Length: 379
Image 1 (cartoon, rainbow, N blue to C red):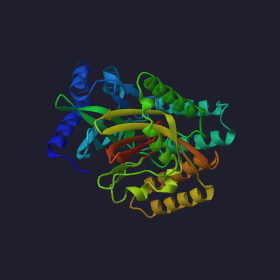
Image 2: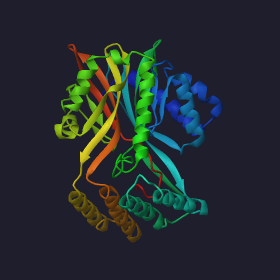
Image 3: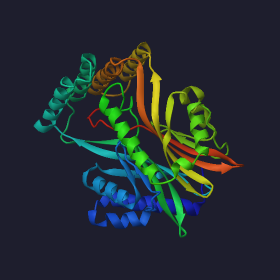
Image 4: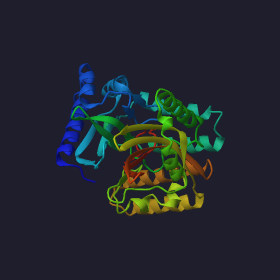
């Protein structure tokens, strides 16, 4: 997972400029930042942390940065974690980051939780069991009053993407922001129709982009998607990297153990709705699909109880032990009350390099949409 030092430094400079923009949050300089670091052509694709956040071209990049600078929590990348990969055209990169969310005890905050409970009680698409599971979960997160006011939390995220050479300078042509998955993915189709609707909105947006280009002419990608659906991915054994939804990094020695046939069999990839950015003998492919799995409720209960045992034996103070134990059970009830079938929307980013007339995976990243902003959801 190494690129030439000069290339690495150029990508580091691009991300440093992006980081400086997020620190200063100067709306007057958004366009100059976009022009400096992004490719700005039709191929430019940026995915935010939510399903609905799909941005294309220069105007899309401007829209994203304006919204983030004005409304998002403080965002910081740890540029010392930057890794990049060798390429025959596009260069992939990955860097760890974090986003700050601030919480405090106010009447407005408490009323927000009350309105959430009201909405769940009046949701005709949910069973009474589902309503009880969600309400119990939210009450658990809110009931354990956290000390201090205000309280700041840094939630982990991962940023990945690809760069291409334009007039001798590297520019970002693909960018993906993803919040690292916590205990369960935020969105589960069985829990809410709104998650299915959000997934369809994303598909519609992908199809609009496809209709403006010739993505569907990439017939060779059909075999790769079929290989994904049939659990037979082909990696570049000399240079490959994978990043899981939890933000864990796998190199060429461990990647195939992680992407084993059992794990891959859980994915259902949309074989018509994919986006491609091609450069020389490499291409960045953005896939969407569903992660479908069956989770035995007894196994989940055993896992929850084991988690509580580890919490009780930890060095946390008594207050934290009580909260984390309660939260573990609340997660268990929320996720098992709906049944054992779990369907999560998922995004997959691939960097493919051509070798001996075959497209091999050089980089792969899996991410799940971010939805819930509740204090205590993660540590």
